Image: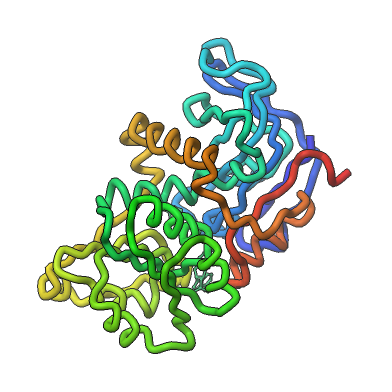
Length: 326
Ligand SMILES: NC(=O)c1ccc[n+]([C@@H]2O[C@H](COP(=O)([O-])OP(=O)(O)OC[C@H]3O[C@@H](n4cnc5c(N)ncnc54)[C@H](OP(=O)(O)O)[C@@H]3O)[C@@H](O)[C@H]2O)c1
């Protein structure tokens, strides 16, 4: 089979398309014929050797896929050959075939396109866990999304609206803000061109901040919180982990709330399954719609990851393994 391989950690340039053996599923696994693989920021970090785990070399990156079950292990009861599924497995998805534990798979209705579903898990499930389980956001609350034109950002805008919030999207360019508007944001802030502090003050206070960026705007965003506000720490795409004065949560009566979707999934698999089932239903009903702005061929994975790494990416992108590239 064809697979995108990393042979040494560090450079996004060193990724290559190669021929490797098709994996064989263990008893509790399914073999998925990958149709589309979502491209996510953690893929960049894994290739660079900067993520929470380091797969054994050589490996294929690619943390989530959508495809069709091609084989099922003996103890797998929920899926059969031909089942349409999404799955997340950390890495291995940038390949024609991937083996995953059946517990990592979620069945898709026939009407949900595999291309759109390939970007459902890492970003939407993270944003869902963040807003619903960690912030316990309520209808009518005001949500500020930072890095709002990125993968988790767009998901947070759409889910924030579905959960009844008023959504302010903040991003670095007007082109990115256009993506946020498409995604349904009520208000837009260009944080490279406008006085963010003043703009946020004009809104009269924020209830929840969704922050996958870190860096220099985090403290400004935290300071805009009303009493009872929650600042969701989702990630550090800026490469900077902010240090906020320890007295600020006290003075603001506001909370810094950590979000770790992978840990939540491991600890509460049934709750995660409920969240994903809801997301699939919303996708089927057309209530969430990924801003898919790029589809790459397998030999272009390095370019796709470089785009994310250089802050040029808009919305989401995926890799097409259907074979249309031959
Ligand atoms: N906690 C969890 O469970 C969890 C789950 C999934 C992802 N994450 C993390 O969340 C973060 C964001 O993921 P994502 O999918 O939203 O990524 P993304 O699609 O790349 O979006 C990140 C946004 O960050 C902003 N940014 C600011 N400085 C940047 C820089 N130097 N390089 C790249 N982007 C920069 C960009 O927006 P502007 O240009 O508008 O500033 C970009 O759109 C990552 O760190 C990822 O590892 C965490």
